[in-house]
Image (cartoon, rainbow, N blue to C red):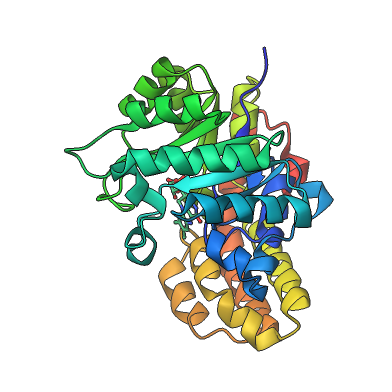
Length: 341
Ligand SMILES: Cc1cc2nc3c(=O)[nH]c(=O)nc-3n(C[C@H](O)[C@H](O)[C@H](O)COP(=O)(O)O)c2cc1C
């Protein structure tokens, strides 16, 4: 049986090439850029062009576009394909942010399905023969849940895969993702449906797959905290023992490597480390003594400061953590432990 693919969710300000490669190394199968404005592409603005860059090792790689004008989206699609030759184009019909929605972009199109259909048709036509996928929410608000209707429209336009984030626009990121609606979408269309929302561990992932029969899973915020979640889910899917959470030393090494790559890329250590603060908050969320850690992280300006913090944290807590790890190793007949050390 084919294994369901695991997608890293597109996340603005998070899923740049460096983070995508980290997740790929940890087992993510399919990667997408963060959302890119179709207008920005036509204006050839430099930040936008930067967002389109990816490494060959990231393939299969998709560029996610947002906008509301079918003509502009079609032109942007042709430009993107000419410039960077991605493996697919993804259209964002889920963004809840006001400045996108007020221009009819992102999830606003869930309320204007005629325009949504025109946008999808225009992009599919401009991209052919390259596949076009779409990412939607289940509806605008709880009184207008229309994911099944939207998915059928998208399928008819030639969209080849749909990711459903099981929340309404109104919910933003609060409340819970509604996987019952995701299951209804799976039943309603013939194209693959990818389920997204609140997958936090391998057990939840397996439960969602069994419950909904989605063709694959997309993981966002959990990967910001624990990128190895992809590996753990794959192990569960293969019926293997799931590796325990990695050691504190391993986690810090991954974080420090991530920071080094950002510094190399930006060529300005202070700027890179300041821009990493929010990411560091996510990485350290459930570490021992995380409140104290996070307070210190909010002032981080250099790699050496972070290294010192890491060393102190490992020194204080490894004594407590190691026996636990050894215990779980014994219990779980660890198979991929080496990759975490
Ligand atoms: C910081 C952040 C940025 C996001 N940016 C995008 C984006 O650019 N495009 C998109 O389709 N979804 C975006 N999302 C939504 C995620 O792709 C995903 O649908 C959502 O986080 C739910 O999945 P999760 O529960 O696994 O995090 C973003 C989410 C977050 C937290």
